[in-house]
View 1: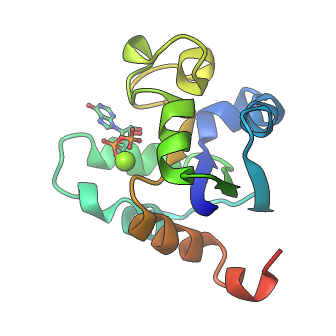
View 2 (view 1 turned 90 degrees about the vertical axis):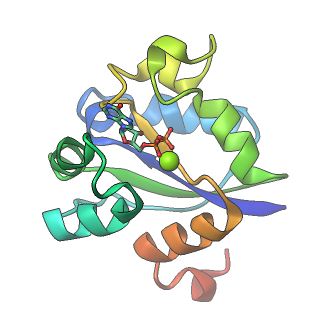
Amino acid sequence: MSLTLAIIKPDAVAAGYSGKIISHLELEGFRVCAMRLARLNRAQARAFYEVHEGRPFFDDLVEFMKSGPIVPIVLEAEDAVKKLRETIGATDPDEAAEGTIRKLYAESKGRNAIHASDSDENARIEINFFFSDFERLSL
Ligand code: IDP
Ligand code: MG
């Protein structure tokens, strides 16, 4: 079993889709290991997405991610990173496969409902970003 990080983004939290998205993840076979409601300031949003600094959408992405509450969730499954990427679908909901979370709940490529880690190494870093005491929790 391995771990990954999902974040229900501000658009989906504001639209009241948090429960449906958590349910979707559990029905796909993920186990919720840690979860909280969080709110990022600008510096935190910039730090979380620093690999995208310099990209044309970076400022909009930072503004969006600090615009309202988010729900970071640590998920466990077999091959969790790959499985979650498949479950959420393509970045742009217009290109996401039928039945994926982004197809179901995302508004647009920018406001796309959910984040997922893209590698085991980034999952470890991103889990630590929101749950600095995760190892100690060891649920
Ligand atoms: P991912 O979330 O599918 O991994 P990334 O390429 O890592 O996609 O981009 C991070 C986030 O930046 C996306 O989820 C989306 O919110 C935003 N983003 C990426 N590309 C674009 C774009 O072309 N226009 C607007 N927003 C974008
Ligand atoms: Mg990414």
